[in-house]
Length: 261
Image (cartoon, rainbow, N blue to C red):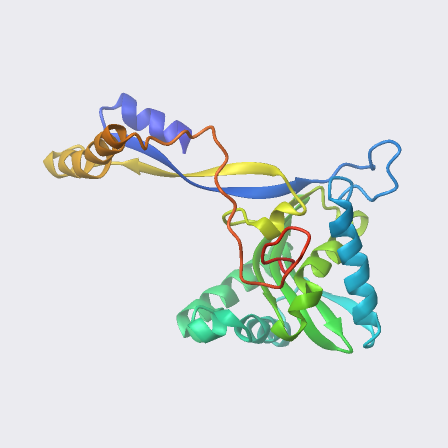
């Protein structure tokens, strides 16, 4: 995209690039840092967070058998299980879950089938006594795990079941060949418990080389930038964006909603 933008500029097109979000990701080294007793993916986390993971797992195991189920095929039952889990909470109540829209569901079915065909689909569930309490619709591609969609059972929100699932998946790093866990989407407080490395995402604009394109550029880019400059609100794109929080679980360690993605 940067190359395309440069070519358009050289050819006389009006262009712009605006920062939209930052994504957190966790690079995973082959071994833990020296003198660290922690696995590589936990070496950079806070002691209270690690304590929370251990305590939550122990408490859940008091209620029965806890296990991870993994699917790399677009199994209809597994997909239905994930869609139902995602729709069981606030996403379903607000009508934003995949299951709420037939066209959205068809899209994710097609994505799952394509990813399975090319060998990088990763449907993962944390199950308690055979019942899914957290799930991921993800991709494991060339050593990178991309968490595209997550869902969890709100009856278990205080345990941070989504965070436990992330930990379980990272615990299978050698078998899965994962060297990076990408949380996808705008960075959140929950995800910052795991990762601090960021990728910046941009929206790129190339306007038509005619009067209408020039008018749009003036209205959407030039005028807006001029107003921001007058108001002293110009954005420093080198500064990290504010983390977003999510209404999932609670954790006294940070005082924020937490522990589920």
